[in-house]
Length: 177
Image (tube, rainbow, N blue to C red; front, side, top):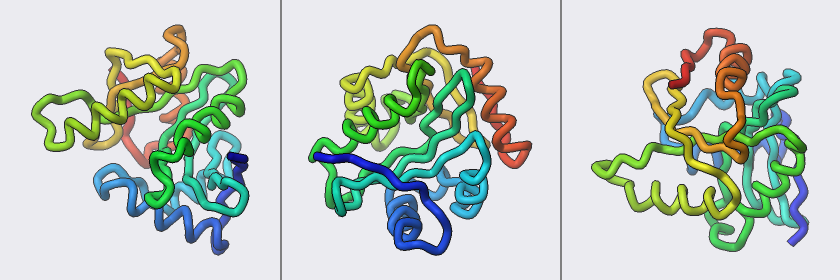
């Protein structure tokens, strides 16, 4: 496996592949406008990546980062290529890009009454196998709430919250508790 990435740019084959996966992988209530992601990815703090294994489209990641934090806002593996190690390979690539910064991501809370609790448990186990630690903190984005995972328990979640507010400039209400 040779995972590489390309930055997503509008009106390209890469963008079309990423957009399709983005809409297939995330329910409408969890998605941000695709155009907002593209526009924000031109800013210094955001990157939109398409991942490939040679010529095979493997997945996508949308990252928001500054000097202190590296946040994976969206991560998805192409449906035809799941359970082939691509998710772990993409995470390792992203951790390499993060360098010494803690990597932060969020997942749906482990709510036992949720219809997709089995899927949530599998997702949690996947991230734990890849070096993430589940915290007791929650990230709120609009009407949605997610549980925070980190690669370093010393990560400053206050800095993370400031970063998210700066990136979304009031377009999206975000908070942390």
